[in-house]
Length: 147
Image (cartoon, rainbow, N blue to C red):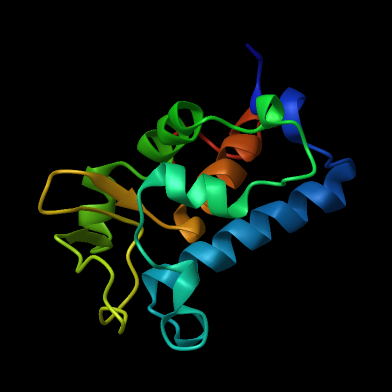
């Protein structure tokens, strides 16, 4: 089992410019979701489609690397719960209860997480990306935990 900080496992950032770029990327992506920007809701709705976490990780995993090196759902879930808890997403008005599974048209607006009628927690690649980025920034000491 791989241990240690996320940065030690999968981070290739070096220097202040790389870290500044990551911080800007996370802020911009989170802002795009929170503000329901058209670039996500109309032009790239697949980035805000709510899905089960294993489905997201399977879709975006680097198939050229050993699967043992991939982040596990439990690790990513801990990051999502830490940075985008259900309570925080409700406060941001970015929590969707009972999203329509398999809908041809995306629901109006973008969400960071939700719960299906069956009680399954669902997320999207935008939330996963932001949570991983924020975790790296916390570990680097550039962001307070829980923000």
